[in-house]
Amino acid sequence: MVFGKCLYVNFRTTGNFGGGKFNETVLAILKEIFCEVELCLFPLEMSRWRNLRNTLNGYLNGMDEDVAEDVISKVKTGTYNWVFLASSNFGKLAMKLKRICPGIKVCVLFNNIEYNFISSQLKTGYQLHLFLTLWVTWLSERRIVGCADKTIVLNERERRELKRIYGREADTIIPIVLHDECQGKYSGQGTKDGTMFKGLFVGSNFYANKHAVEWFAQYVAPFTPHVVYEIVGKGFEAEKHLERDNFKIVGTVDDVESYYEKADFVIAPIFKGAGMKVKVAEAMMYGKTVVGTKEAFEGYSDVGQYGKICTDASEFIQAINSMDFVTGYNPVARQYFLDLYEYEAVKGKLRNLLYDEERQ
Image (cartoon, rainbow, N blue to C red; front, side):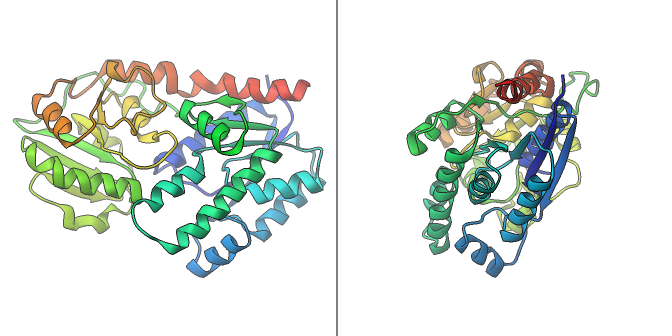
């Protein structure tokens, strides 16, 4: 069942990182729900001074006055049933849309409660510009919960936080969802090479991932000498100083598939951040056991069936040295992905959310 026309608004993303893959998957679902989806995509990257100017003007994540005016112009002249905002940082746009085009329906996807995300970033060190970003983020999300017809969060924690901070119940929870890129590719064979195991970390070089990699390099890797770890992700080539005999920094790659295929397990020592970690679902898609923190598994169900939760360095070391988890190919992880986090598993929830509102 398809209906109407949708305007999708977001900064340009790439499937080379987890959030980009998730955004692309959500967009693909919208294209199946609506007869037509028009895109309004804009650059995320900009100069520091332009970013500061936009932040002072109430815009975040690449959004600025020109983009907002373009969106409003499209809505005024188009015949859209919905505007889908792929970030809760677009609050000023949502406010303007509802004021100028009160009949348009707006759905917003909270990839995180961004206020909590920036707050956790502040805990890593005193950074003056983040206080401004924190204020504008709170204002943006406050505006958007007051304007949006429908709100989507990724997990139960984000639902509670949306209610606690902004006083609004989320309309639905849609977990991380990805297209299955591995169907028919793996036979279920292990990948252990000789006496050494291979651990893999995948993620771009931003503060939560950088902290995770630095922490693991110092407190875990030296004490698990039978494992060689590879760190793959955009920007991590800048962290070559962390390398040691069994800890290799790969950095930016065109395709992570070969790294997943050769890995015996995936590490996710994430202690900071918010939302739901896309790379956990991606690792499950490739049939890999994830050894990670409680934060890494936030929003995922039945973790003990396919992953290993560790709370500190000693538990990581004990788990990895004892290898009391499935190495190589983990068919249970793969099946959980297919049942809960694959494209078809959640497409109906988004369709029902928008269609039920359309019928009212």
